[in-house]
Length: 163
Length: 123
Image (tube, rainbow over all chains, first blue to last red; front, top):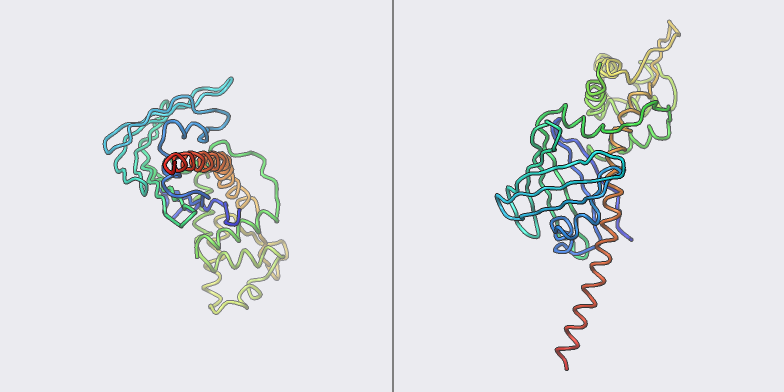
């Protein structure tokens, strides 16, 4: 693949996370892969769990529900409502989690046409900074080792991102 | 400080280009305040203010040398901040790699279908 498949993650405000990734496929196809109940379970996994329920009513006011299941693990479920659907350019949906009273996250997914490529930008606005940090820190490794190489990588990345 | 508060302090401290430049310089070794001021077109009090923010976030510390009081990089909060982001990133990297494969398959199968339809039409 000639383009970069790096994910760019930024935190432009203390309640937001923005993630960008380029895909080697035309926009309608990428849109379909993000919104079709046949395709979504083929790639969207939760840690150690596969998507086993995928109900999607893709229209403004329509609901969706996802459940992920894994051997020896507690099921994880999320649900919400579509606020805006503009195929194949944009989907805005609310997101809440079963068994986790974290409030509602507003997720905007934008699909940008770049010829044979498609740039996807996912913006998640969390109800509070604390919730955002909990989501981002989920399962963080303990016993951080000191490593100047990784430090340099972080600094370089933070610098690029904020330009 | 809780982990969340520590991360806040780290990211707030990193949200300034001068402070990032200071950290990048300290990554290659200890430096005194005077040495740190050299490449910047900024007064020593201004630089000292940035150093205070970095110190409060635990990103730098002062060495034992009482006379020169050089500043030193403390990498633990940065490593923690990296992991915070890396965990999230690796989760999505795995998902998106699977999506790449789904898209590749889909593109190939749609092309075959289109060819079949076209050849039927030309008959």
